[in-house]
Image 1 (cartoon, rainbow, N blue to C red):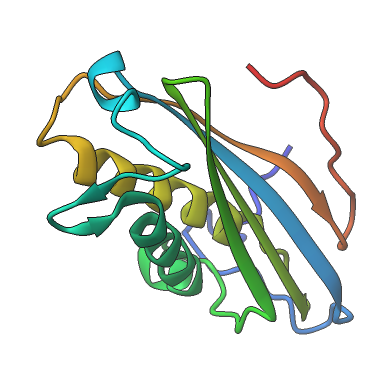
Image 2: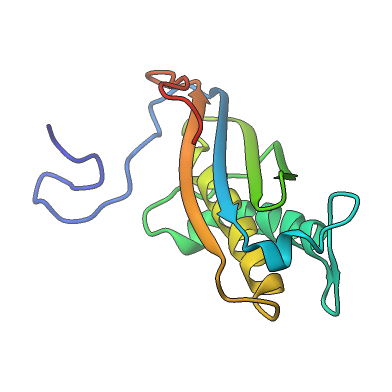
Length: 161
């Protein structure tokens, strides 16, 4: 199996997507953040107000901003103008925060890296905004749940943790 980001001389190279047809591409990535009880019990009505602002609202904005800047953060990613990006953050129980990032574009390349970047940065923002209470926060997983468009679709293959 050859790596798509290496050219014939085995040097890093951006994949040439010029000959591909532009199609609708979607991706859904998810990050799980585990909070210690000392933080989880402070969440009221689905969010926590801090001196920096609302944790989930701030993380939502950070995730969207990061998804839009993926090509500036990940070498060899194509710069694409996302048609849509949404971040959904919810707390399950008192300690589990679920971050879902969904991206969509009509383009020659997929948006899975954008969705993964958006979910990751939103999770990191939850960590950053809550670390003043406790550093015992764990970003447990970041994974691609689904992608459509392009050569092959990826559907969920395992149950969520």
